[in-house]
Image (tube, rainbow, N blue to C red; front, side, top):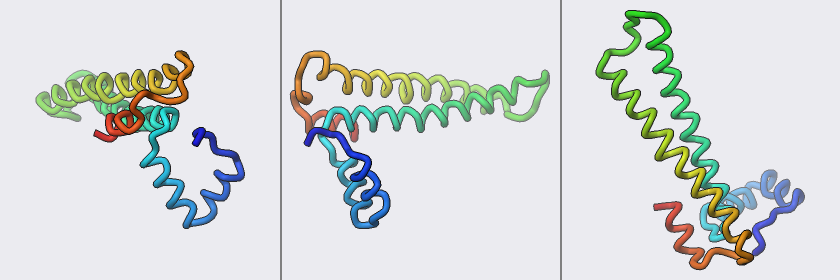
Length: 124
C-alpha cells in the first residue's frame, strides 16, 4: 500500500457506512509512516485547542486587576497545565509527526525500519 487515497476512494469511504468503518479501521491500524505522521499532527491539533482554552482562562483571570474568576491555587495549576500541554502534548507530537513524515523521504526509504514499532510508538 502506498498510502495515497484517491478522491473517489475517499468519497466512497465517506458515503458508504460499511466502507466508512473500514476506512476508520485502516487509519487506526496503519503502519504507513505518512498516515502515522498525520495522526501525530491531528493529535497535536486537538491538544493545541485544549492548550488554547487553558490560555484563554489564564487571560480571563488577568484581564482586570483583582479578578476573582479563578482561585489563586487554581490559576497556578492551570498555568502549569498550559505549559505542560503546549510542550509535551503539542510541540513534541508536531516534531515527531514532521520527522515521521519527512525523514524516510529524505533518506530515500520506502517506509520506516520497523513500521509496527512506529505505530506502537504512536498508540502507546
